[in-house]
Length: 254
Image (cartoon, rainbow, N blue to C red):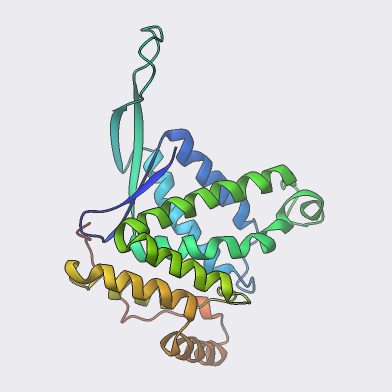
């Protein structure tokens, strides 16, 4: 079973699971993000950030992150030949990045449905492409819902269960789509802002940023407007723009 918990300094969440747990997550992410990499996709930004998390999770089960051996709680009456220990792999994901993915991933499901079942058979994505079963769509959604659930559980540990409930009530009662054509450079801004926040103030900052993802304040709308203007001048996508002022620290004190 995959788990997630806040890191010591609240810089991120530690996602942990067995090889099979983490492998299943990466496979579901690869399938649900699709084979066509197109900036015109209204959920390109969400898919790109999800694939970034996928990269870290994949490296975890490959053994290049943290590994520990734990008791698997097998019943003592079982034969001694049964293994009593299991290997679990883990990786740290920046807290604000993880929360963004947890809040946004379900919104892209309807769009991603085109890769599966009868709709998937109509996709012209090359001779090597095999349509995915609709049953895979159901499974992949469940896998990513589980990932989102454990991240939100870690968020509740950090800021309190009541605050997460308020957050999801905002998402539930507001009609419309929060993350369509989302300018994810704003997420970079929030990530860096959060990492610069003193540890003792991170709970309040995390709560604030999580709400901003859903409420899209003037700071987000102004940034998106400026990015769209610059993209028009440059003849490119918003997602191709880069701001050199947004620099991540070389090391994170998790």
